[in-house]
Image (cartoon, rainbow, N blue to C red; front, side, top):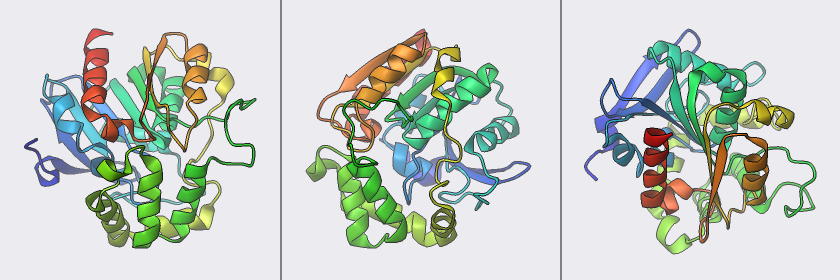
Length: 283
């Protein structure tokens, strides 16, 4: 692919934040907002660099922000910050009335809340490995958070090279292909540029990095057509979550990918890109 991060990087000032983002595609294309996950070192680019250009190619306007509290965007006060408010400020600053939202992990959780709390702003909803507080949990770990989330919590406090490698490896099914030194370095470099982001999360754990859990009883209120993409081998969010979301969101369909971990958009980028483009263009 031709695009590099420097080709697509932009910044915008909202009432509360400076938000760093990547943008590709025509300004008049239907907006597709790619919301990254909540792990240490996550950014719009590190989460979605194989997806931005292919999704924009058929004429969609693709925007992948660093949410405030991550990457090169503003630091936040976790006592008052809410990701949903930040995304609404971003839409308003960019003059976007409605957009398709694509969210991985925490970004999926944020997108679900957006579809419930601001239905007029969401044209399509696509999630990958979105955590929700299910009751009962049928197949998840019985001793607390899944293995991947435990490693993520450890990495917020120790983000040295070995621990970062451990985090990236647990996020994917095929470690040899996708837990690359380059990806580990991308995430480590993001932390090195803005270490205050990590310090702020640690200081406000366990509230951070998800600010407010969605009310699962409201999933039936979601009106946007919804595509749930889930790695069968996800060690952060059990594949049963896709079934739970699929049976509770009225206009939904679930796509479960085998040999796939928590980052479907990276491990199965071509399939993921086709699914997203087809869904946004034809639903």
